[in-house]
Image 1: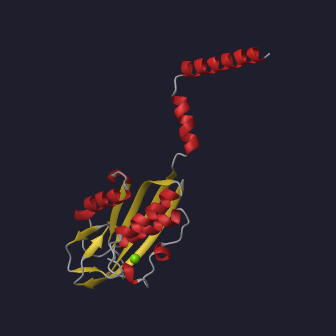
Image 2: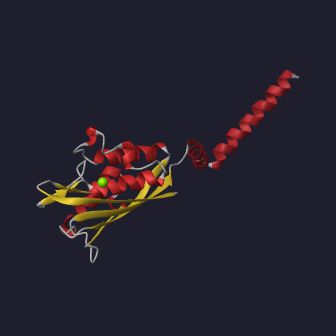
Length: 192
Ligand code: MG
């Protein structure tokens, strides 16, 4: 098992779409950034990469690279997920907390949960989406996201073979072993 943690923040700016967790939310301000500014998907991408100690979002998608200008952050998440799978892990569950003064996330939380689950190919019940307002923090013009992920090791080839063998009824295994012994004995007598 591996645990991963990610954090991100973006500043609100008038006149751009607001995207959180892959969902576009109707609001007069959006989150400024080189990409689509999806603070939750960025924190999730970092959490996945962190869990397998494979750098961070900037390692693969540097803001200096013009290719990622206005990019859909789902692309970043998919790349991190590919690294996780190549490392032999699968996502068990995700938990997240958003901190923003507005808009209220409650009415959108179920949709964000479903979208994030879909992007990770896991059940919505394995994605926690929580939101708080930044009381006393003075960050009313920013959206902040904290994400933790848990990864489990995928079953390897040897483990799958052992499990397949265990699944075969014992009398079958015994009779196969018996016939092998018999043929070995028979061939030995033939030779001598
Ligand atoms: Mg970011």
